[in-house]
Image (cartoon, rainbow, N blue to C red):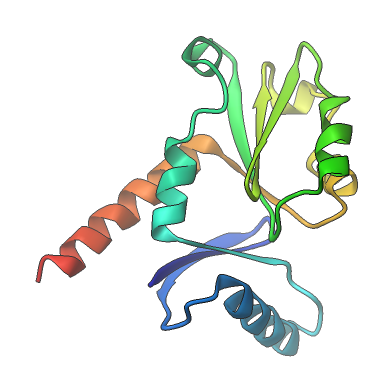
Length: 157
């Protein structure tokens, strides 16, 4: 299985693993990173097919996604947010910011430059009560496209 892993707010790597459990793999990678760096590094692992599905998912109408100035961000978490966290997140929907939770991802539509929003990634983590790493949806789409092509080349031989 090909895996996409993201160290919190810093990078992503793609690697192959024989592991069938992303949860077990996340714990192993986090443990190795903690040993290496001396502090906890939140790690979020998705298979390349999961990344493709995340990139293709449309949490908002096309008119919203395509509107000038609107940007979609995707927050990756290790676990699905609780019902209580989802409910609390909905209280932060404004004319500028809108949110949808689907599985372990939070889709954040910002209708202004993110620096003009009163909402932040740190605030999202507090609401969800768990670490998250946020990426622009266009970045996620580029990663999905790049590694889908790589996977296609590897399976065609």
